[in-house]
Image (tube, rainbow over all chains, first blue to last red; front, side, top):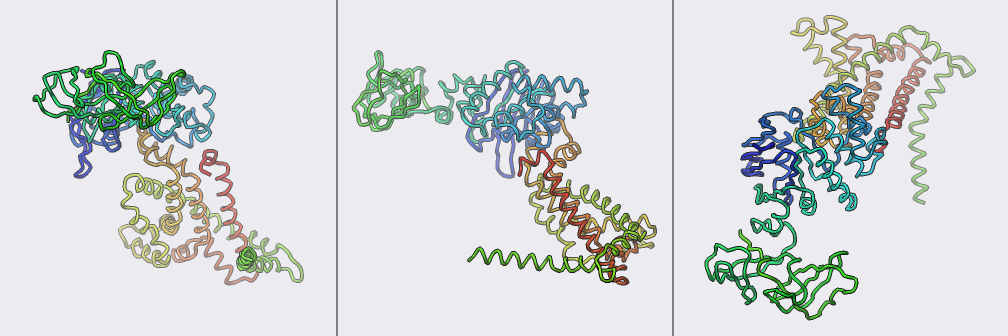
Length: 350
Length: 260
């Protein structure tokens, strides 16, 4: 049995079913991200695990203990909030010590644990400061230390990086992941940022309309999306209309291609095929099955990557190329060719 | 031109408030014929009834503040956290003491809690003191509730509560260690307003026949010439002292600086 089990979780607010038959098994020490657009129910799932919402039906089991009926303060679960939620009247050290004090831990052990936690987050000298004297990133680090200090069974992160600027967000997400690995604490992370979810997680749960559309490793979710929603929500996608010509073959823009996997669709049927921008190559690539003429419509310079938008067979296609100092990006309006292979095509299923 | 008009209005407003105060203060210093003196104040301070009534009202102020805080902080907190839809109703209830005269409230109390009632509070001095404290708490309710509610508005009550809960805290710990300290300045301003109200209250104390400062001021005012304005100046000093204390507390509350 897994360390954390969510089985058939349902949550309704009046007539509105926010979470529908949600199932998830999390192993001890695993880092799971709940990824999805606003209103998809990811935060509600997290809040049910935390004990802030009572499930309409279903159960939550942590380490063999059914906690569904337990109050939030009886679950021994640490939580980080988007708005930091540090207690403004307490110093950093007092904030970190709060959970230990509530538990009745002796002062000397408490002080030692606070010092250990502040070292862990890299703020050993900040114990005497008040939250308002810290930057956003420092406050969120303190919030992490506070959540970890009482040694919770599970750590819940409710979009903790959303309020931070881009640079701090990247460095803090690496720190959070390192600390999580070091402590081996089972963690559920809620985010709507796919980059965060893909870069931090052991597994990602992509949610839509209250259900888990796909649960899988980031590589799997990105490269083999289970549904059309997952394919379109995670990453950028070019969608082509195709026609099935055989069990493993299709036709894209009139050109036959061999698909990576067989499709369970009748011959002659139309289907949607998708391609990631990095799977479309600018120019004629050796071994490519399809080479199509294109007109460059837009160029976005993103540093290490250049994203090009080109009109191909009547639709606009996005493609990524690596930036090279000796190869300037193509000019808008230029005639070019793009090449692609059938094995990179993702068959979209509804 | 506009600036001149604004300044003129401000000066007129200040004169409207300050001139009567100056006149009263000047009159309180004229007890000795032909020269200014503090005789009226000396007489007031030498009167043992002043200290008795002052001490009594001060004690009841403290009790009223405690009752007010115990009643209002959890109520305002709960309304903000779990019952936002009940807020207009609660606000209406807390405003009632402003529209229902104190004399109506106290007669209601006397009818309900007289010696032949189910709870004969007026049957003993201590019981009457309890009744008076409850009456004062009712009179101070609009001010205390608004102060605390304004204080609660400056913090994210929901998130702080959930953060404390996730760390194992129960409701009492959350209220006592997180919510109350974070609205302490608001609670103190409500407390000082309560103090000012209780120190000057006459109707309830007089009708319940308790030796409070309000009836003493009235008694003195009815029988003496120079001491009443001296007493009024003292009462103003207490009120202004309270307002000064509010400012001081706000300045010295370290974590409040972030909100400023």
